[in-house]
Amino acid sequence: MNCLEKKLVKGMVLGVFAGWLLTGCSSGYSLVGVEGGRIAITDKYDRNPDSEALSILKPYQQKVDSTMSPVIGHSAKDMGAYRPESPLSNWIADVLRQAASKANGKPADVAVMNMGGIRNAMPEGEITYGTIYEIAPFENALCVLTMDGATLKELFTEIAAVHGEGLSGASLKIDKEGNLLEAKVNGRPIEPKKLYTVATIDYLAEGNDRMMAFRKAKSKTLPKDALLRTLLMDAVKQCEQKGQFVSAQVEGRIKVSASN
Image (cartoon, rainbow, N blue to C red; front, side, top):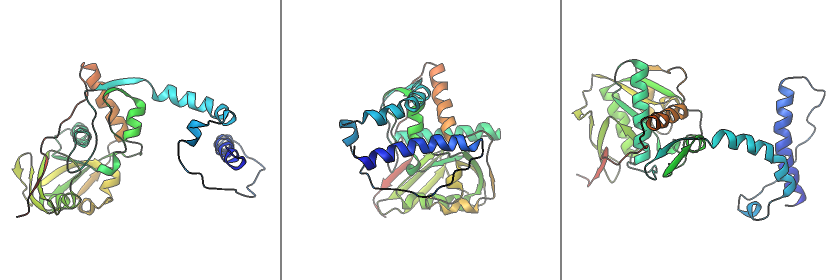
């Protein structure tokens, strides 16, 4: 590790520590300059670790490891997230729909989770807090919306255009070009004027990730203390308490057909 790289590592650690100190007291210090550089993210530092840098990071690493390493459940198999449908995206969407049903006191019709929000796979075997943080690293929270059938179909059209997202409670048939051919909720055709309850995360509820139809929702609520990450952890713990492994399948929720 060269001189600049050592300065950067030390500076990042000491900067965080200094930030913690300065939040609780005033200081006469002021920033007079900033030095920066570009460091390639490779396995270089794993192969040639710097002992001085490691000694600085060690207490922080121990604290993180003690928080993230406890086992909270088990997975029956490796589960990834991919389009048009995947085991992990199905599981997360199911968790969202179940949480919305509990929060509202009545069944939620549909749940949607974007593939881009799922940042890692679920490995077979032990599930730790760290596993869930890697899958859901963002501070996304459950959002429950009310949408009429016409708007819901617009949403499904947007999902078809990107060739699939995490989906629960609904089934779509799309073609290879990303056109929506058919959409059903709970096995029934969508009624344009009927109101449907849709669960998702707050990020998507604002119309992000090409899901503009969410902006047309008739109502929107954010249940208290319902971070996605917490909901996933709770779901894993519930399975563990029942002696069950976390598992999900590809069920044909989104089918790709030849163009008509």
